[in-house]
Length: 560
Image 1 (cartoon, rainbow, N blue to C red):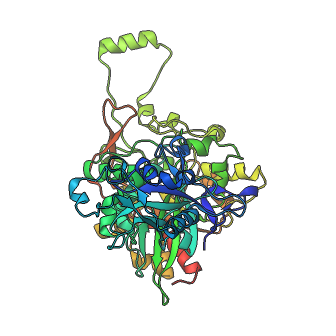
Image 2 (tube, rainbow, N blue to C red; image 1 turned 180 degrees about the vertical axis):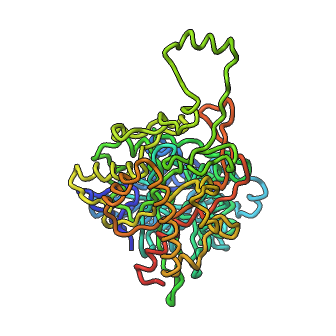
Image 3 (cartoon, rainbow, N blue to C red; image 1 turned 45 degrees about the vertical axis):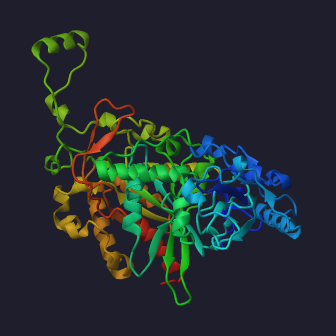
């Protein structure tokens, strides 16, 4: 059983912050047709309103979530939880055999349409409620009638007693938890990768082999909680959804259906983790592995101070997906894949000035000289020097402003953490080194022996390869060879090797993926700059690094 908050680091930087599972806070969400005001009016005669606090808006400020929340805060001392107090209140009312009088204009029925009202017994204009526990740790507040649960008024969702964040669906009953974080500089592909994972309700993760199923663990308009009936899913309404999750879902629809890439991460607000449940069948029922995907903005990673909580959080992860862009090997996007030359540089459009324009330009810039050879060289100004790497990458709108070598960011984070006594912070982690945008590599000479990776049947993960240790090792070796060849073809090959060898981690895997499967181009006159796909949305083994981490943990637990 899990006994921590997946949003907060514990004291002393050791693991997540512990919580008492028996002393949780609860958020009250109302189903369609009901509201907090009408509920309070209906129950005010018996003074239930003091149980619920209104206006809890920290999520709006920190996470761009709903403005108003209705919270039953965690008890102090030996006090009872909100649901326990509510149940006591119900029993007290029932013991007096008294029902709560409702005025028609102020009743719970006032927001229900005529068709819904016809199914209610309004003869007495009275309210009698019950509080029913769910298997997932939540509670349903229902109107008592002959047909049980026909009238669900609200749901009490378990939350962290400290930060009041909703715990993921099924978190309290899960058998294990792993945190996986995405690591890349600003503009390095994290947001696009995660948004692409969301596509079609995580379609690429629904089955990963060995009958293991993966489902979202968020409250959404699709109501992924299996304990809800169809009518409850319909009535839940958008007031109950996790706003940040729904925004990512909508962004994934734009990506798949219209080819519009997600907006850059809003670095002024914290980025909420994405939670999934891996259901692993066994002889005595399912084992549940909860998975949290953490996405820190590149600016946070680059400008962080060692004591930054968001950085300390990274040391408590089970694994990281460390993303490397082809540009860090000198491979740049071109208008067509065929324009990538064998040495890894891509041709770029160059417009020669008219004679009059050239004369005017030279008059104002007489000290500037550029040769034709320089036009064809890799644009050095777009790659940061080692001397600058400590300042990181803050150019979200620039085309590329990355660390000079692929492993600079990793060694920077390791250095930051060592400053506060966290030596070898990755020694217990699995690192999935991942080349993002591998479609750019397809026509390079170095890929001639590995063209099978781009076959149509290999654009999705091979489940057998991932579960079979021998096959997985062979694929890993191929991927590692490719990355080695790309690394050592650069002018900093020896330095790349030294940086990689200096990183201490529990295990490694190597992956070539593409979140989109095609190129992108800027959409004119958009601020902030937006990008659109130039071809068909067709990811290449997008889910492989994450699935690798999940399977690794399942095997470590002896579940398969």
